[in-house]
Image (tube, helix red, strand yellow):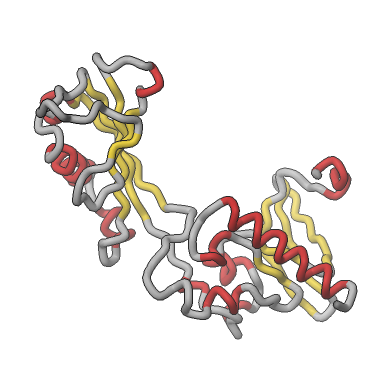
Length: 238
C-alpha cells in the first residue's frame, strides 16, 4: 500500500497545528528545525481525541464534541528482580504462568518476564502493572507518590499470593506511565459523544480507536476505512 503513494509520504514530520479555513485545511509541520505548511482539501485526524483541542485551531471556540469525555488512565509498572522463584504453597498450586492475575486485586497482576527461558527455577524478573482507574485524581496522586509508596503497593499486593516476595525481591524498578489507549468506562459507549466525534468538522475527519470507546486494532482499521469513505463520498458528491 505504501509503495503506491510513496511520493506523497512525508516521514519525520511532526504536526504542530491543524488550521481549517474556507479553502480547506492547512497542516503545519515541523521537520527538524524547518517549518512546513501543507494545504489540503481534507484531513484525516488519526490522533487521540484529547489532542484535538490542542492541535486543531478554533476547536475550543465551538467544540464539535466533548474531547475531555475521552478519558485515559495513568498507571505504574514495576520490574521486580527476584533471586529465586516463590515455592508452591499448596499441592494443587498452578505453576507460574507468563501472565498471572491476582484474585480480587485492583492491579492487572504481573508477567513473568523470564517465562520464555523455559525454566521454572532460579532468578526471575516479574513485571507488575497497576492502573490508577479506581483512584480519584489518580494522575496527580501517581505523580506525587514516592518510589517507596509504589513499591509498598506492589509488594503488599503480590505478597497476598506470595508471602516470601519480600525476601526474594532484590531490586524494584518503577516507571510511571500515561496510557495512550482509551479507558472503557460505564455509560460512555452510548453517551452520544462518540457519534458526534465521527462527524466531519470543517473538512477534518476523525479516525481513532477512541471512537469505539475501546482500544483494539480492529477498531483502528474500521475507523480508518470509515473516515476514508467519508472523504471519498464528499469529494465525489455522494
